Each structure stands twice: as C-alpha cells, then as structure tokens.
Image 1 (cartoon, helix red, strand yellow):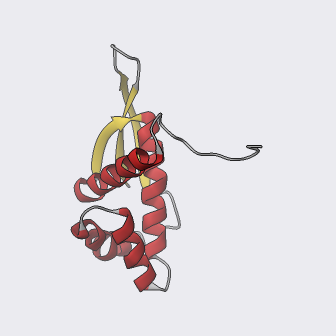
Image 2: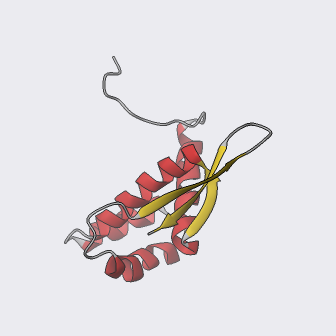
Amino acid sequence: MRHQVKNTRINRNSAQLKALIRSLSTALIVSWTIETTKVKAKVTASAVDKMIARTKWKDKMNAIRYLKKHLYWEDASKIILDELHDKYKDRQSWFTRIVKLWARPWDGAEKVVLQLV
C-alpha cells in the first residue's frame, strides 16, 4: 500500500529524474536563479533545501561527500560551503523561493522562477 508515500516522478524513470534534479540544483546554486516549470521547481527546491541544511550540521566531511554525490560541479559544492553557509547561518529552512510567471500557451505548463532567498 502507498499510504503517506509522497514522491514526484515527473513522468521520468529514476535515473532521468536524478539527473534532472542534479542539473537543476547545480544550475540554481551557480546562477542563483533559474526559470523552469512549477513541478520541476518544487522538486529542485526541496533537494537544494536539503543540501544547504546538510552543510549546517557539525560533521563537515559528510556534508562534502553528500554535495559531491548530488551535484555535477565541484565549484557548486564550494559555493554552498563557503558563501551560502555563511549567508544562511541564522536561517533554519526555506532557502529557496518560487515566483509564478505565466503558463505556456501550447501546453499550459506553469512557468516559475526558482531563486535562492
């Protein structure tokens, strides 16, 4: 039974979903803002929030290993550890913001801007 099981597949298999989340997370961390669809933004926002929260733990080596596993570029993990860790030291959660833009006319998908707060 699937009671209280929440996962968003976005109509992809697990390998494609993992690659999509990794690429969008890396792009968000490097450029601080990306434009994507609403569903992809929600999944990416939760993944990036977990990454930033993980760096706030006391064990830094596990955080570094986690970031290297979930990001494509090593520079992105350095950005999280150096810049974002200091920026969000007083903040507990909600490190990302989703701003609605418009719906695409040809398929009706809602476009949003995903940004780091």
